[in-house]
Length: 552
Image (cartoon, one colour):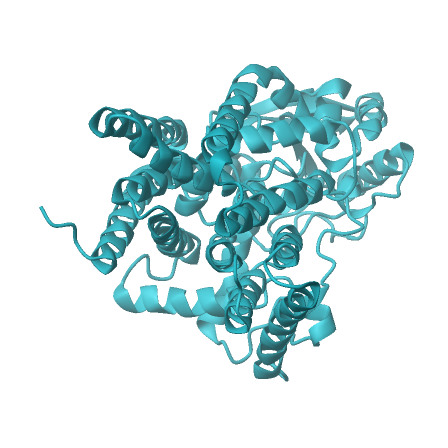
């Protein structure tokens, strides 16, 4: 039977990917698996849905909110989750993820001229843990990742003998990607520059290509800056290139705890094993996470051995530099930031799919085709089967959270309750989004006497001091929390505390380790238990136990 034209193959890859992802979103009924950050993004998108003319640009997501506001209005017009942007974002992400699958298919087909290898690579990428996760939830990374991945794939194909126009196209696509999510500039730019530095030709030619790449990046960003000039929140070119997002906060910094978080991020990227949020859990899951990392290492070694005879091939060299260069630069950056975070790993790790696609093509040629194809098909599908089963554990989470929120409101009247949280409990996002969009106190709020209906959500976050005040001592952090609790009690509020009350100093240190603030845990736990007593008054299977705090 004649193989369909490449265009039809790509259209089929897109349609099948989108159909599966949309079905999975509808079946899971949980667009906040592992992270509820997408809820905040949906809230920031709302002004762009309601009135783009007055909505404010975000310097770290310069193009994301205008684009997603437009796409949400399109879904409203089509009647898809009308008026519920936190659900719509997941469906839009599925669209971009499907484009990623198309990009992978086209790239492997171009390099190997093998339909079978292209299918195997596309299925493999589709099933990788963090990619599949981010394709069905409302997190904000997918459009930026899709464009940056496209730029990387083009660079791999073109940077063997790059013309000026091809370099400019790669730079423009790459820039549109990081203008969706600013931090995407850091892992891939060094790799693109290195690939051009190693391209063919004289040193002068290579230098001119590097200049062209930088010029195309600046020109594309400059055009975007001019198009938005005068809009609410518009910034200059310098501020677009450096937004400083996450710098000088608790997310930034180096610690040994982040080595465990790195194991979690790299391991879960391929096969979802758990241990996503803190180094303590990652240490407990060291074996399954290590198995996932070792499997990735085996794929890399096998691909290197099979492709070694072609090491002089310029295209293969460009592909290697672009993808392994992004891996190296990206993991250094991630170690400084949040190595466990799915959106921090997804753009760093596509080397795995590229290695698998090239390895599959070699194995299909070197061994019996039918036998090898069956074996490789099973291996390519295995991540999808495993990770799909893992995601099923969170099925129905959105409805369960809404039910828990109603139960909390009934038990703890919001007009007379201040909530004390660790700070990353998923229910806090629902309270923020659906009660009142008010941030935790962090020593900066003086509430009116109880009862007070405004704001509806009044809360204190233990993690706030670690995030916003990385220069604090442990005692300063503890005393800031105490002042907020005392203020709430003095003004007649009951203080409802989550099960963070029951954590030991070691458990809290494990959680604070992700913020490079583990040394503050003992002082915080001592302050809480030396000054306050608590009794459990509420429990829910979704949100856990709640206690009411009283002074000793």
